Length: 137
Image (cartoon, rainbow, N blue to C red; front, top):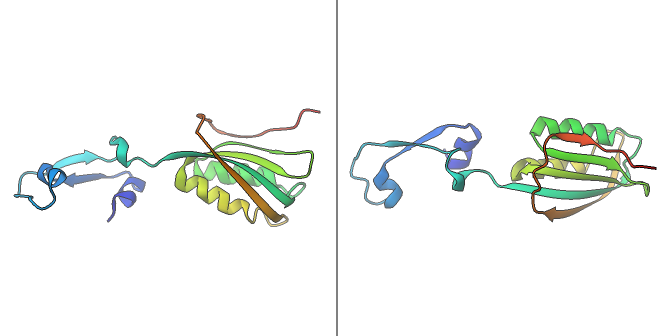
């Protein structure tokens, strides 16, 4: 099992301290337990994607579906309709989850017809929760 799979299952990995220093010299020393979540270099990377979706994306429950999918994946951010007919969204979270949201945006809900998805990668800003925003008239 690879380290990513262990992280996803939030398990702990037993390794010898000698194995960590040199994988070729494990002399049967007692194993120690490493908490993978507590070890920063193994934690999944947090990313932020600013997205503009074009096509038939308004009036087809795109925003509500986006919010539901983001909450299922644990992705933070927001979504809103733009006056030019596009949908704008920000997704922030673990890289694999944000990429799943971006993949979902390429098709959207059943009634949508997505023509284009523009993605701008930004530095994470610490978004919490996911909300539907409304344009101020």
